[in-house]
Amino acid sequence: QVQLVESGGGSVPAGGSLRLSCAASGYTYSSGSMAWVRQPPGKEREGVAFIYRGGGRTYYADSVKGRFTISQDNAKNTVYLQMNSLKPEDTAMYYCAARPGWALSRPPGVYEYNYWGQGTQVTVSS
Image (tube, rainbow, N blue to C red):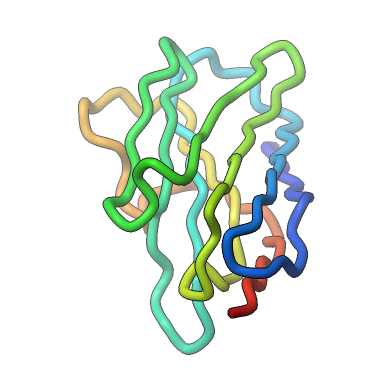
């Protein structure tokens, strides 16, 4: 069973930075996709950053391109999200998600992930 545990959220002023971590246990696949998905208060979940386990190909939502970077450390089975130049509209619960075995050229849609973490809150003040 795959378990995902996020950490690193917090409150920062606009323009600040945070690094989120997602530690995956039970994830023995060398392929598939992992992602960071956020859910602002009262809104739908949206994918912000995606990474393929094999090869490390990444994709980003337009709203975070140039500010967020997703990366992985396969030895530690951990995925990171470095968030710079944070804006108040980045305020949300951030979730780590995993879809082992995903082989399509497009990243999974938000609701195509099998496994989810419990989330970590990011609050950006203006």
